[in-house]
Amino acid sequence: MTQSTDNRNGSSSFGILFSLALMVLVSLGSTVGAADTQGRPAKDPAIGSSGPGKPTPDTAASVFLGPMEKASLVLITDLENGKSSVTSTDSNGQYSIAKGLPSTVIYVAARGRVFDLSSGRMTDSTVILSAAQVRGVADDDPQVNILSTLVAARANALAGPASRGPFARIAMPSCIRQAEQEVQDALAVALIEMRQDESTLATEKDPRADGTAGQAQLIHVSMVVSEVASARVAKGTDPAAGIESIIEDMVQQIANLGRFESSLVQELRAAERNMNAVQMLRTLQQEFGFGANLLPLYR
Image (cartoon, rainbow, N blue to C red; front, side, top):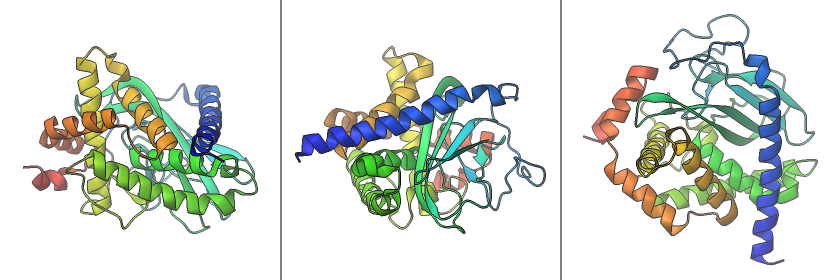
């Protein structure tokens, strides 16, 4: 089989899974439509201390950069049997998977509006961020962010039809490992100052884990993405679609090629060079209560 055929098959498989997640998330939108999703998400260090649907700080996973608002939908799919469940983020942009999920391969898709670090505001644009995880009974819930989204896209493309169904447990572990390395390599080429961290999976990079290399890398990439979106807006792109467009470009290219095209690499490098990282980190600290520890890296 030729490489071009592999890419088409992988892209098709990813497209099917992504489209399915989108359709389910859209159809279930009414289930949280009455929730308070206006304005910026609130800082609340004590969120989730009690009550249903409120993750505790010890077990909650973050959906970072994309759906960082209360009641953004999160779809959890067992790729082996196709069964899905739905939850939503709390006011800190965190979610948790119901206990009792057996050891399996899961795909998490979260849809919500984007908080733009460059402008410091919640936009009207919505994106789907995702994560693919080989999950044991005792594993933490996967972090969902731009890095996990790129890895999930590439892993699904590599596995092709085996990314779901009875062969998922066989195909996906090796595909996820390969995707992790390819995403790291692609970002190392695209971002000159990317914070290196090869010790953790994308689904383990917690934006709230102050002082970790995973946090530093995730937030650095996220700031660059916000800066690219801002630059695209300046060129006439709809302000609400700036982040949506850059995430879509990154996802499609990493899924199909395992790397970023040269034009996108240049765009990412320019954004990395021009971004006001200090102001973005101050905004992050003000709005969400974390990120200030990274300030010395950018002064």
